[in-house]
Length: 330
Image (cartoon, rainbow, N blue to C red; front, side, top):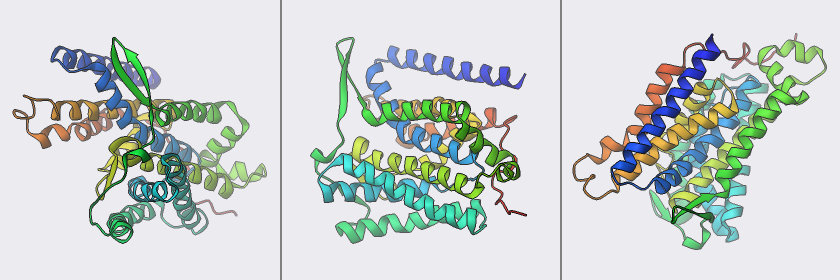
């Protein structure tokens, strides 16, 4: 019954998205450009949400994705300039996210720290560390624009005689979501991961190290969030500002809740949120509209959609019984 109800809401969300696209097309906005912007906005959300699905399936909660986004966005640009390569910036941004998550995992999994408080502490740390890094590296507070040739290139296609581009990172995010689902539901490792979150005692009795399993998923989740953080300046915005994440880490958490820790549904949720942000950007930059509709009213659309989705979808979700609880071997 719950599965049927959940499917009903997903179908409603898809239908609403299609209707909005049709209305937007009647208003004269280009659908390819809207989809392109929506996919760009989806990518960091999908990467972080899929990584957190793996992390929470193993029993660890990391609410510090907003902080990982902020730190890796700045350091991703820094590494890109050091190695003169946007690709290196993305990869080292992912490595930075993995290192942050490794420290978080050691503190929470082996140090038995409260995971929610540690994650919020990471977010607060990033609020100060981001501007500090901008100032210490580039001696300019708040913003840094890097050379255009460091942008990670997108692939271009033609749709109805209109150029449409999609980033290879976006395609990778979709593939990663599929692989994560197969990992969780079609492999022995996936059974161990889910068991570590549902019944860690049974995993321990079976001879599998619960701490190592949780730490591995934590690091993978951090790496994906770090890739998403570096993606924003290096493959989307073309610059980094101290508020670059703009709450996207929390929207990714909303996607995780919406999905019930299912990576494929997290991808769907990320697209819905990304599409709403794409609509907002399209409306804001459209002549004749931005003079009528207040800028900040349009910009709050993704956050309103997030709240509405959470209100509708949060009921009836089943999460692992040992989620957020440090495992103490008896």
